[in-house]
Structures are given as C-alpha cells and as structure tokens.
Image (spheres, rainbow, N blue to C red):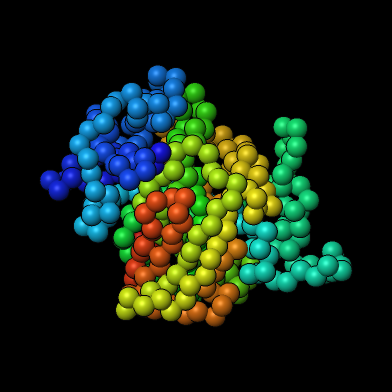
Amino acid sequence: MFLSQLKSPGGDRAVAARTGDRAWIVPGAASTRDLAQAAIAAGRRLADEVKARGQGEAVDLAAALADGRVLLPLDHDDPAHLHLTGTGLTHLGSAATRNSMHAKSDAESLTDSMKMFRMGLEGGKPQGGSVGVQPEWFYKGNGVNAVAPGGALVSPGFALDAGEEPEIAGLYLIGPDGTPFRLGFALANEFSDHVTERGNYLWLAHSKLRPASYGPEMLVGDLPPHVEGTSRILRGGRAIWEKPFLSGESNMSHSLANLEHHHFKYALFRQPGDVHVHFFGTATLSFADGIKVQAGDVFQIESPAFGLPLSNPLDQRNGETPVAVATL
C-alpha cells in the first residue's frame, strides 16, 4: 500500500491510498499524521486503519502531481516539529564517492571517512539484539527545508555546489508515550553542497543545511531488502546524466534497526507528536562524475518499488551579503 497527501482542485487537503493501479481518497483523513495518530490510538497498523475507513472517491495521482497538487507524504502543521536528519557512509559503494579503499590499505593511513566506513562494514549489522557501531549522522533542518514533490530546491547564494543525493528516507511519528513509529519509506533527494564538504570534512554540517524533498508516495510497511532505482538530471527535457542506484539492507553496511537506534536513542528525538524524516544514504552522486548543474535543471529519482517518480527543479540564488544581527 502507498499513501500520499494532496490538495483537491478546491484547495482542501486529503490523504490518498493506492494499491496496484487503483488510488482513492481515505475518508475522514486530512493528513497522514492524523491518520497515523488514529492508528496508534486504536492500537492497529497504519494499513489496517486505512482499510477500516473504506474507500472514498477515486483519484488520479499522476494528474494531481502534474497539476502541482501533491504534497509531501508526511508533514507537520508546525514546521519546527518536523526533523530532517540522515546518515552517511551506509551503503556498500558509498566509500568510492569520498575516497578509495584498497584491500591492503594500512588502517592508520585511512581518512576518517574511510575508517568510519570500515567500522560500519565490521559492526553496522549487529546480531542478537545487540547495539552496533554508530554511523555518521547529520542534521538538515526542520520542516522549513522540506520541499514538496515538484517544488524547487533552492541553493543559497553562498553555496559552492548544488548536488542531488538519491536516497530512501524513513518517515516516523513519535507516539504519545515517546515511542517512535515508522509509518513507511519514500524516495528522497537529500540535496547537498559537495564542494563545501570536500573543502574540509568539518564543513559537512554546513554542506547538509539545504532543502530536501521526499515522496510523492510513501510505501507503507517494510523496505524491500534490495531496491533498484534511477537518478537522472534533465536539462531542457533531455537527460545530461543518468545512473542506477541501489538501496535496501542487502546493499547497506548498516541495518535499518541500527541506524534507527542511533537516531532515536536521543530523548530529544522522541518528543510526542514530532515527525522525523531520516535519510539513509546513497552511493550514487552526479558530483562524483564531474557533473556541474545549473539553474533550471531538474533532478529526477525513480524506483518501481516506490510508485511515482520524485522530480524537483534547481533554483540557484546569486551572491551573498553578511547577515546583520541587531542589538536589542
């Protein structure tokens, strides 16, 4: 089952569910968050909550997406209570985009990135309920930085690069007792500044404070162990770069449970009612192939397992002026 959020032609919010080629409005649900809260209160799975409500009118999701009426599949009416975070160096090919690792490399000569990648390979999938090694972790902002499918990803004037990162994101709601509930998974573009990151690894935090998009649809239930997709950049409607990407635990050095533990182990991230969107990483970047994007280019990410493709144009701001802080 897939869930998405959209606006009706009249502007009202609604939740749509889809199985196969049939999509319909979920009766009595104005948001995915409200629907999930009702499922938690009833003590049942999200898919069961959707089924219990029956099927409303049929909806053409592709047409709604083309009309710009599809919203993020999960959001919060107060953007400050939506957290965008992620983990890097989690995929088996991700080391190649930062450095090279040779079979006989001396561990003392490895960069910190490569040491962390190796730690994930050795301890990222613990067995028997134990806690594994913690991954690289980063913060992307709150709901202010969450961009709906089709919306522009804005690169600020001080940015040195504007690059896509095709990923899978986990979508979560914190229950009334502080329990994190995973609602599902969505395609995501974890938009970043790779030139800034390359300049100094301690600038990684700066490079990640950029907008991000996810959706259009949320896959309810478990993530397939093997996910295949395609990431491309369109310029004037023509692909100037295209490459496959892989995700799912079969292609990762960490288990999802381990990544989730090391995020939600902080009580800060278990506040009732909050929404979390956590990006699980990638091994495929156009930046690694020397691609330089420009304003108007369109990032497109698709995977058969996740329904409709995620597309976002690039909007590039120009120039930077110092921010003046006023004395009160």
